[in-house]
Length: 149
Image (cartoon, rainbow, N blue to C red; front, side, top):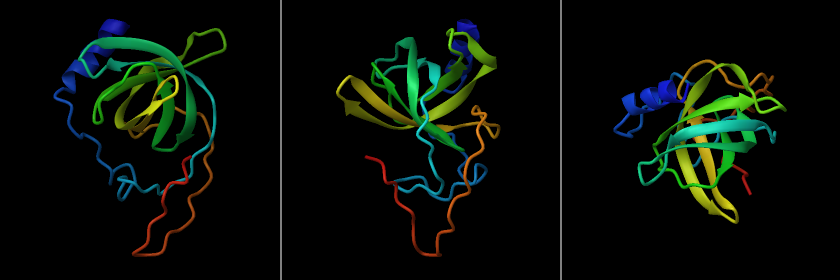
């Protein structure tokens, strides 16, 4: 399985923006959030390449999730624009579902224990089995900024 994920990740290099934001229903993700997030802690396995180009697999937990992305903590630093494969794990650490989902790193900021990562999904289907609240309408010419701590 790790070899399959490594192959998928290698196909996406060089690490450039490959997100089709219009397809995902996001007008402009740079510094603006057009949808609600849910503070939900889920066990996940994250696989990808760190800033040194070394492949890694790390078990961690989500900080929050949304229709188009998620936030989570990592011990290693990853590059903005980098591609990560994410799998949800059950309480016994076994993968939920049959394959990982690909996400693109939109931010990676230092944290007390490592790095806080924000990532956007690269596929139309959702990894999360959650009913998200509807986003509040935003008036034309204005934006809804993130209220992240």
